[in-house]
Length: 103
Image (tube, rainbow, N blue to C red):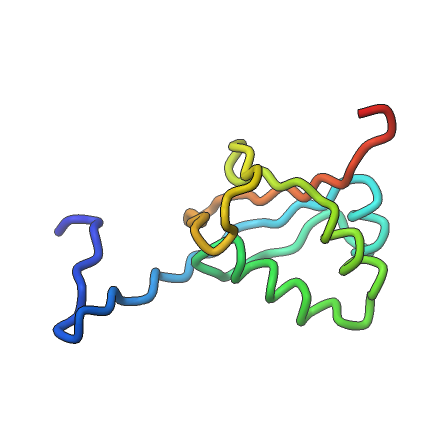
């Protein structure tokens, strides 16, 4: 079996499979999350971040910090890519990097 998803008879591609991995928070994101890391179960970075927003709805400062963060997925910079198009891997890691002083 290949890894390419085929379109359904209606012409719509099926949803990507959800995988599990770890979200690691650094600096201010770690302080606001109240934890250094937590698991994810998601298909894309956008889906994982939406779950973080749900899980931490009672931490508005974390949600604010996340809006300024950079992300690495399995060591690769996400940059300006659409987070909905960034696929996550089984056992992967999402690094949440807030802006650091001096650069």
